[in-house]
Length: 593
Image (cartoon, rainbow, N blue to C red; front, side):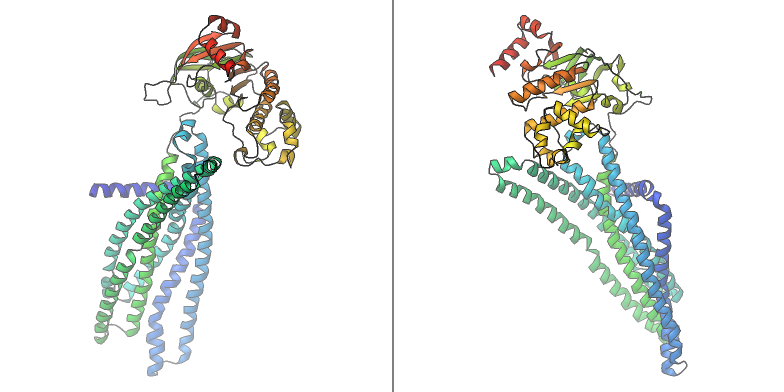
């Protein structure tokens, strides 16, 4: 148990050090100014506690016994007013400045997390649903703000105030100060115990929030199926259970976080009773004045307030550190697809792609392979088609070319150079991809077509749309090329989405073209139009194509037949039919469909 406690404390220190070094340090100049105003506000509070003694002893009691007059009160009253004025102004300034720092830090963390996600490979996104990733960037980072902003800001102010007030108490009467200090070990012990429990709860809250967001995103994206199958009530219950789980954890967090209040109040009540009793005895002995006792009690009460605040801040800090654990765990995931130290830039007009003894497994530790020792040459400027039953490895081969994944064994070369020697960005700039899983962004038609080709002119965009037979339906839209297409292109049919994707590839004008069921969502008439466009687009380009309808790839320069991750046959359409093997069976099946 003790070993676990030490490890937890070390983990806390590492987390805080990392947050301070990476995110707070760049704002150290602004932070120094903020700390100055914190000190000013705290000093004003401590000065108020100290000046109470002369106000009571020399002014008010003096007026009563005739040793002073009312005019002696005004300077002290003015000083007290000044204390409150300085404290108010200084507090306003340091809160505003620290809020600016904290909001900047939150933005920095969010940008870092998103930027890091963009560097990670496809397998990472397959393992982590989008709802959970969005939760890390939004919910978790905002919870961290409590650790970075509220805790750091107020911790400095309250700690300074506490130290100054302790100084006043010791200055007033060190014997009473010793009695008052007995509360601190008990308070620190309680704060520590509650903080650890809150951190565990925080982990659970953030995890359940992520699951809730994942559930809601899944429901909204599948709303058509939900309504079509009459599953509204089921989804209400499912999301309701997730909402209730988060609610219960938040209630538990508040309950645990406020445990310190009644215990601390009881401790303070006991200490004040003892101080009053012992202080009265010392007044009777002439060792203390009534003003000195009141001033001491005021300092103690004022010092107790920072203790309560520090306890609350520790709770916020522990909740924030729980979220920080989740955020930093994501930042610590190293991308697998990275540039080599001496990566070169790929600039080609003609590209030959060569697979040499390529094997691949989606699970590195698994013996189950998606590809087995593939030897394949995709000739420069020619079209190579991949066919085979579902699960034969066609899409896997396509995904290896732009390095969405890296090969498990073997090598893929472009113009006799390992693609891992090229920078990832330059490799992908030379590739245009049209997939059956089309992504349409909630942006304008123009932005969707020019995605990845940001310097394209409107004329070029329009020309690409015409080539993809998309211009006619675009011109019928309310704002034509400026029309927003909605989330995942909700305003488009499946065929229209595919034409937008093809226009995107045409505009990219890359030497390598990857087509994965590029016409699968088109009707026969539209497919004939697009096939002519694709035939023109493929001229002079190295094209790797997957097609469900085998009739669409009869003119390919080479057809490669795959089965269970192995190449079974390859050749032209006519030669493969003559062989009477797997391709002929697939082709006849395609014709019958």
